[in-house]
Image (cartoon, rainbow, N blue to C red):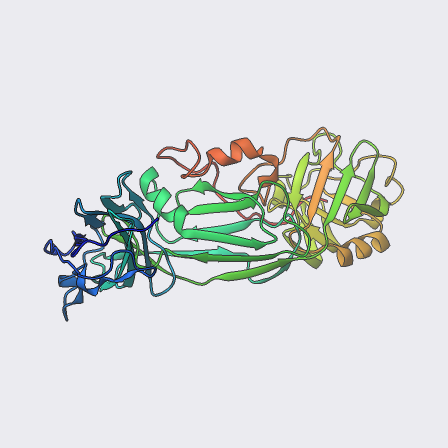
Length: 419
């Protein structure tokens, strides 16, 4: 269909950076409104204060972009020099766009505004501005764990904050800035264990041979009154094969799976009455060739017939309170037949050496059919996998129902422990 061009078409746009009190400036441009390429918006949109030397925007205030009746905004993209995008909302009629996520302090932003006039002809303007330095006395630092390296598919990602964050809105700002990206991609979520600690896990275990990148976009972002995001060090993790050890306490056997296939079945002994091994999913925390285990570290009175002081080899730790999978040559006669330990999973020295060499930090160790208590979700290692995905999501400030709160538990590291 042919159009008869009008002698003059004006698209008037106004860009408001409220942080700067920028003036509202209408601008027009002559030319063919039906050009196949966007108008050079230099004559359509003005952006006064941010482009002036020495002028900077207040990151506390939102970015707003408006257009007059002769046209509408079709798209706005705003990002800083580090690649962080600013989220925003556009009205249904295209007359106004405003940012919905906070701007970062001490940042340089580039904003691309696309418009359309009444005849559908496109226009575009690229704007840039800088934000002021933060006025906060405190910076919120983030330390991710574990260290870079290869881990098992049960490894939990942790984020330790330098300051406590209780307010739900502030938690949402923090959580939105903490990013975990994996290849292949899998759904996952953060959980606020306390005001200073978050855990991240996928819905299911990580895929085998995955690459996981953990980083923060919080630097320069205002979290609360006089509290701004600080720098953080990104972490890159990889996963190896899916190794899962399943201990059946009733059958006195530990079965090891590699990528779903059984690779070994080992006779074991677990916790005796009064010292039953915890049921549920645990994650390998560390491996120690030698550990001196003493009953007094787990509350057994010195002089009691249950007390012990033993050198233990090939010890694979699964709780901070002292539960291990380890060599127990003194109980070989009971392994495969009876539970005689103080909570650990014991096996022969040869089997413990094989297990020690086969598993890695982050691998899964699951206990079933024990009369022990369930594994704690937090505070005694990584019991996170014992929380259902539905409940896990409630621990997120973005999708859950957490309120100003205290921790579900405090992470503590106790001494070794049970044999």
